[in-house]
Image (cartoon, rainbow, N blue to C red):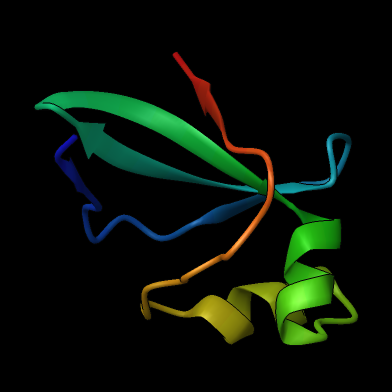
Length: 71
C-alpha cells in the first residue's frame, strides 16, 4: 500500500480529542486522525498545543494503535 502525506498542517478537533491530518492512500486523498491519548502516550504531550508542536512536520512512527481513515 502506498501512503504519502501532503504538507498540510494537522488540525486539533476538541470534541473528538483527535489530531486530524490528510494523507494520500493509493492516490486517493483521505482524512486521518490520531487520538490525543495516543499522542500523550507516545510523546508525553500534555495539551493540544504540545501535541501540535510534538509532531510538527516530522513523520510519526507508531508501533501499535487503531488507525481510522475518514472519507
